[in-house]
Image (cartoon, rainbow, N blue to C red; front, side):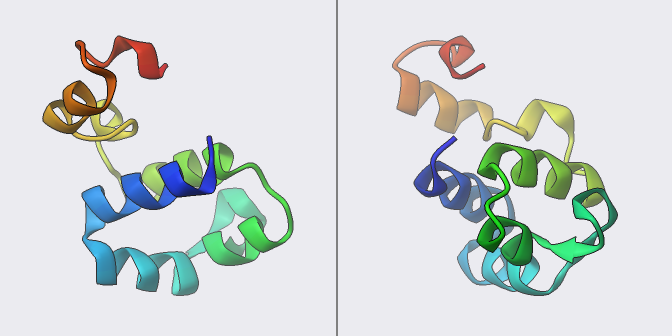
Amino acid sequence: MRMSEFWTLADEEFGRLHSRTLVRDHVVTALGDRTAEQALDAGTDPREVWFALCEDLEVPRERWWGRQETRRGRTGSSGRGRR
């Protein structure tokens, strides 16, 4: 996952302003008691950070790759190509 995709998913799920606040301030145990921002700055794969953030914030698994209607628009299909 590229950083641009990380931010697209975060913005879609939480809203642009709230996603920035969560990434900067929310401490995630699965990331070694670091924020997503700290983990990313330390070189952790954005995909690992995104999944840890989703799990910690109880985002339904079906939305971890984005909302269904958005996935269709990005992939041009059912979204299965994203996994």
